[in-house]
Length: 319
Ligand code: 13P
Ligand code: SF4
Image (cartoon, rainbow, N blue to C red; front, side, top):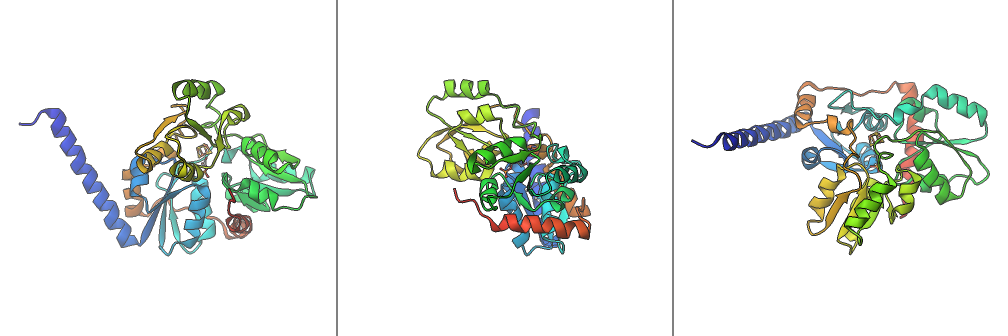
């Protein structure tokens, strides 16, 4: 008789295998594709047909031939897929998976800001509701924010919502005078300068990769400011073998998997997005089984939001 620990391990592996087979079968039956953001749990990233940052996932959502998109991410990402592909069924496996930063500005608040700056063009970060996108001229992600702003006429004022830290990064990159909204990501602002200094004391030769959603003092200490997918391609090409990663820790799973010879440490172990972690393998299986939770956007909002998103998808990052 095997010891209880080994029995439990075997039972767990069997259960996991059954679950993975079930997801595969349901995916084929439904002609579904699974998209996962780089912050998802490792096991979710491993079963996804495509993993990526917000821009990559938006492009994939627009291109896919599948009838059903299971979006392993947060609500605004699934909404983006629904805006770009209205003929497809978009499922978010946990209906409570939201983004607190996206909720920091409402369409009404944006309308008031536009009324105060009537000649300004509005650029909204993709981390925003469909209603806010519908009120915006352009959408952007962390990977193409500077390119989007640089593509706008020099003589127009720009309003940037909702993330003031990404907005600050864009202000510095473009040299434009930008009206910022005081939104922030609670996961990225938790990373402090001391965290970076302590990590550098442990790995003095490591390259510090930080996400533009980090605070300005943290970004000043970074060697590279990159979106999540840009971090993956930078690490793959870099001759360096040690990296300090200042973003949500989920990305470390794929960084390690793709670069087994390199060392990656999280700038802060507390940088965990609880909303991204709401998606589990069980919930992916239930999503496909019960076709839940369907994310839809009313047509009059969708049409306006799509204009801003189409302009974003057309502008690829240059760096
Ligand atoms: P990217 O993956 O586009 O860099 O975005 C980070 C993020 O916070 C998404 O919620
Ligand atoms: Fe929103 Fe931040 Fe979580 Fe991204 S990491 S989904 S910006 S709370």
